[in-house]
Length: 291
Image (cartoon, rainbow, N blue to C red; front, side):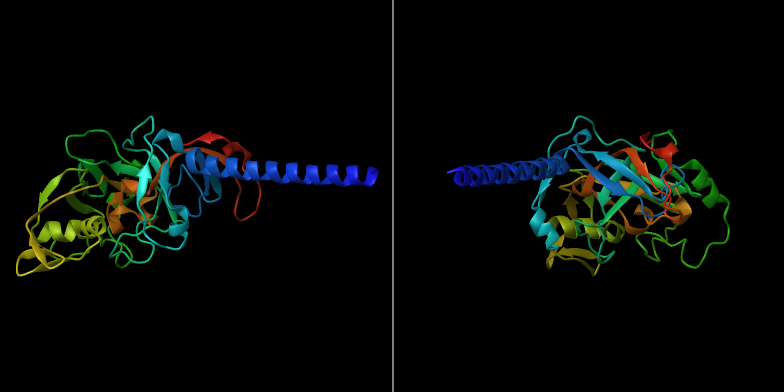
């Protein structure tokens, strides 16, 4: 009898333990989806504010968490992404974590669930953005954008390594580079454009991503899935992202505009920082708010 009671209690404890472990895992998963996520800074492209070895937290309710088919994304399948409304909108100069939109090729937009970038937002939907002698400008706005010291460095540099001056859309006729870029209109949901050769080159990837089709330019006419079109109304919002270390940052100057759906959230705090060369904690950076 005592043996039966002991066995019963042992089984009961095991079931309770498994139940609470499952609950903890489920709560952690829910928190990761709806509340926060942690990311490690792998490079120096956001110096001096963020340095290699910083571990940051993104607080998702700020701009709203995303909901999508996680398992389809893990299989590298493209899936619809929905965002729950947050309590703040994305602003210029916000530092954002996002899924890199070109994990396989700069010729098309795709999402890879495990490939993340962190950059500063310098252009919002509806902005007309230019780079003049290395400095970011938004039409009608006087507020400084991005890291001004890094832009001064680009402005003062006359000789670059081969190819660094070339930029999106890598078109010899348009001829933009990282010192002389734009003007580029950043489309928002509902915005319309006429489709000439220049707009075909600037917005081809966005239109193909939205339409899941093929856009071509032939005989001075744009064709979508072999049918001629002369204008386009965008279905999504887009953003222009830039690294704070402008001389060493793979950002929108090179690969173009970022779809809103790919934004994970706004960087919040550095919760831990470890020197990658010495493995020593950098205590002075712990719990530092990110600006």
